[in-house]
Amino acid sequence: MDQAVEAVLVMSAFTVALTVVYFGSASLYASSISAQLAPALDSAASIVASTVVMQNGNSSSSWSSWAPSADPSAYGLSQGTAVYINATCFTIGDNKQLTVAWSKATATAVAGAAGSAHRLIMLDDGTALKLEVRVR
Amino acid sequence: MMPAGGSMSRSRSRSRNISRGRSRSRKGITMVYDAVFACIILFVGMALAASSLPPAPPRSAPDLQGYATSLLVWMDSKGVLAPYIYTQDQSGLASFLDRLAPAGYCVKVYSPDWTLLWTYTSPSFDPGNAAASQPYPLSGYQGVPNPKIVVLLLSK
Image 1 (cartoon, rainbow over the protein chains, first blue to last red):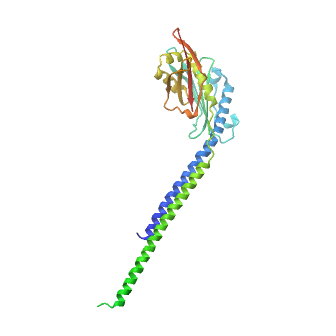
Image 2 (cartoon, rainbow over the protein chains, first blue to last red):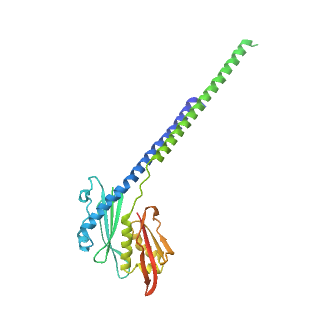
Image 3 (cartoon, helix red, strand yellow):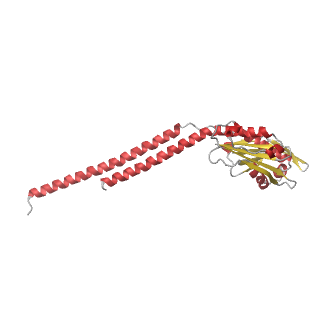
């Protein structure tokens, strides 16, 4: 084989290997960093969930009039933190069927790797409130 | 007739060409070895870097323990837990928990001496990132005493 063709083939193979290693290392590093950050994001989500629960307690009227806020400063979090809150109130009727009484959520969902916290609160009117908070 | 000197010079130039070709192919093989060796160094470097990364800290889910216990308490207070447990209606139980659980879940039902009677696991349950409820005792169903213990595991 011509030496020039050989050189091109060898260089191409090396470039492919270098690209694989480059992207492999970058994805490994990114996953490692997100794994390190995950507990902190979970804690932040837990702070938001606890704040919301403390504001409303187990009063069904308080939860009915409550409007979820995605403003991170309202929960003592730094600006730039994305907060998503989704609250769903469930009730079980006489026919033992689970139905949604109402549901409220902040406008924008937080996609991708995020910290999350969940609470289930039994309200004073016998309904149960499922609260989901996601923070990124 | 060809002069003897001409044939000698031709054979000399042929042997020169052969040795040049051998040296070229040797160069080509050396280039391949170099590339393979460089690739090995790259992959070994990546493996070393990957092994030196700090392990991911375990994600504790303390909120899920309270969530699971509250869920069992609420379902029992509404009178829907015991029928599903005692009739072993797993699909009925799943229809509730699919909507009420944060993500994956696993229900384990034990006898009072902690013998596992049956278990139901949702497809999305992740045991590596789960928390269990407090053991929830049920005394019986439809007036018949038949104690059982229910444990609900939830995962994010």
